[in-house]
Image (cartoon, rainbow, N blue to C red; front, top):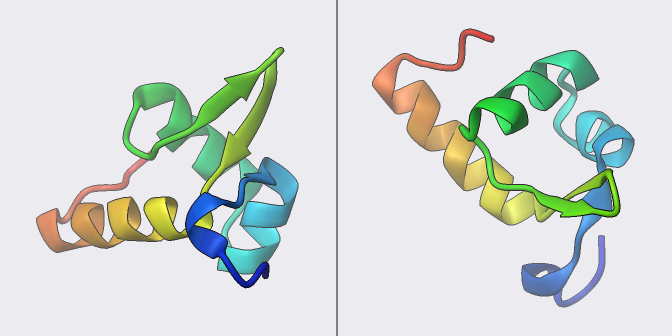
Length: 66
């Protein structure tokens, strides 16, 4: 990952590979607004650190059922 990951955005495919989670699961969470995303001309982009934080919060609440 980039040195300044705070400002890096990656594709859904790259996010799924990095987190070892299914793309469909992450896409569903993004569509529901459970994880942060950017829509760049119809292409989703994610900040891995922000997504990890959101996933940790969902897990703590017992959520994340997509």
